[in-house]
Image (cartoon, rainbow, N blue to C red):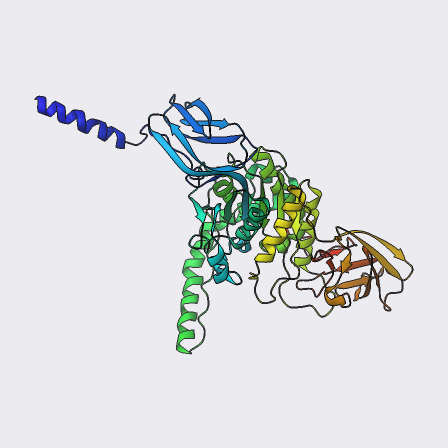
Length: 515
């Protein structure tokens, strides 16, 4: 009998420790070895444990204690710290956790669609970039791509030290941005890549934020209709679309022709395009984590609804800022690159209208825009030159956020004056004056009269302004620059940054009625 009792005294605790809801304190994935915590902000720590369990935390000489709430959650904070490390974070409750190699520095969230997701491995000069990527004080975290129809409390991912082995699969834009910051600031940098190719901005915006704005109701209405029709759409897809595709594949193979791509299935409740699905799964779980700011590269998937994007993008930025609860944190974004065929004559363009919508977001405080109208590729929506994208984002951050003597913006349209048969266009942020490469003639300007017909124009730089005219337009009223899918334009600042495309008119565009 005594032997049986002794055996039970050993086995029973082991069994209890493996039962669901055991007492071990648990942390979210973003709190882990190798992480960077934001300097000069209170450090928020949170997780899960048994209700009523006392949790003690300690980091770099600072300590705190908290009691777990009735729902099993706990949250506490440590005093703000200066940049430094490495440190060890210890956490004790009914069990103990030790997180090692922790740094204090600058943390940036990096989000968007495929051009943010695109890896160092896929970018220009990748082999040399990968071999050079030995930066032990840059840390990389990639959020696994999942969707959810309600806010989640955790993500999947881990912090990696930046090495030639860990950088190839990481976001190229995020890495080049973070590398430039690290070199200029001399402090640790943490980069959180949460991006998903092909996704629209509404998927990255919370449902309450979308519902609060009447102009965005068509997005929700469209999705309600799609979800109601989803069973019928899937039935048709499986019974008609897929068999037709399979026959086309067989015919193509028999004739030695390229095999057609499989048609996409109808989008359902778990689609990454569904409003709020990515906010819920890939942003909401990060909201307790202290950050300096965010960078964003997205817009291609919303180009057909560019007028709507004027409202949607601004609301998304405000939504993130409100929910993070740390004020109007810096938000930098990338204007769409040049793409598709070059238009021989001035023309309306959805991509130009999306760039305009992005520029309008600069009216929000603490925002910045990297203009890349000169480094796109006509036949590839994913231009490989991500180095300059990261550099231009870092110039904005260094000059505007960190107070460095750096040109923080491309030249932006400021105002215009009609001077007889010509129009003078003034620019702001023309660091060092306006110029063209090799003093070439200025390209990319078009001018129109009251008939709203645009013609290519002659343009002459005069200080921080450009004088635009055309013999075809005797009484001009409006000017456009770089207005097209893939415009030929060459106006730069003295700092080497390309001028942003713009128009001085507000005549209805091609996406004005697209909801």
